[in-house]
Image 1: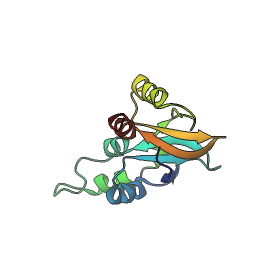
Image 2: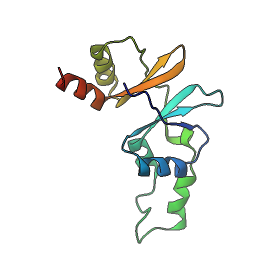
Image 3: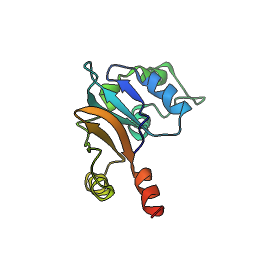
Image 4: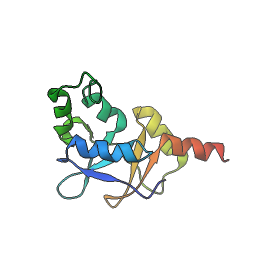
Amino acid sequence: MITRVVTIDMDDRLSLAKEIFDNVSFHHLLVLDEDDKLSGILSHRDFLRALSPNLGTAAELIRDTETLQKRVHQVMSHHPITIAPHCTINQASKLILDHDIGCLPVLENNRIVGIITWKDLLKAYCST
């Protein structure tokens, strides 16, 4: 489990998500609502799918750059599957495979304490 989690607010613009994704090596941002509760997940894949394919190219138009003005809640995955910190690697693996997702936010008493990705699970299996 990774305990240093980066979050973003539901009403933040995709331009902020772009800035974060451009400067980090991970691919999931946990999305918080106005009460700082987990509301969704913005994956790098969700983010890229929402942007114009012409963004950053010679064919870029104003309407292409306007895709960065969308709000995170418009493209995030809602109702994320979560896991508790005491769950096993096998339980986490099963959830990720059964739901075809890339990560699991780890919650304790409805508070984010970490995140587990499929890469974390592979690393754990390879080290045994």
